[in-house]
Length: 271
Image (cartoon, rainbow, N blue to C red; front, side):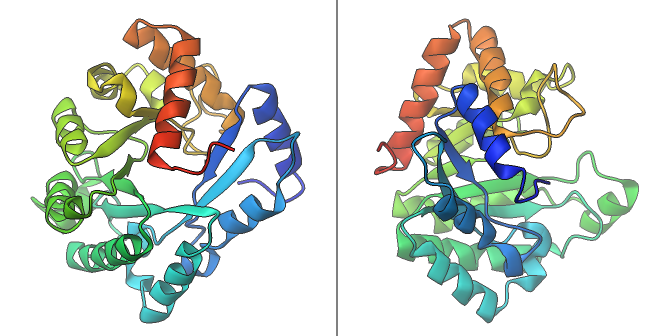
């Protein structure tokens, strides 16, 4: 993770890489820290640095901590103009220590309500148990996070017509198609550059140009040629270049298109 002392240098490197706008994900290490991204957004306003916006949310791994007090805190954060999204939220059946699916679903639905009341898009985290450890597979059984998630979104979120982002997309082309049909954007992180990520690359090619975004998932998933290093916003340029290559277009087109997509989803972030 980044220390406060490192932040100016991290943002300066992003600016040098022509990254002009950043959405900092506000989940922290749990609800007690989900305000920290907003603090960063409000303390780094400078014409010489990228514009930083924030989200706030309770990650599914922390779903058991979605208490009334935590949800009240989230609702207050959602009212801040610099907090432009709720998330990342969703379902995660990957780690054996994660809460039971029903606990995760309750936390997810509670946060959908907050997002709807605030009129702000959601950032979705989805990780199923398909590639999990044997212990996690035993715990979650046949439960499929993607199927559960898409069903809940279709019933409880899509009617609001606010949309959102499939953060760090790692599903199949079918998951991408169904997400797009529900009004979501597909956001591609550094793992799209990894040799084994065939499905993600297929989805990157499949998604229409006006519905794709690129991201870091920092400090994780640094793209090739920086795989294994700590990720940071400036490295998203490598991911964008890779996505441009697999889509058969230029980096300038991808950069311009993804920025236009971001501003369309988050009106008011243009200036």
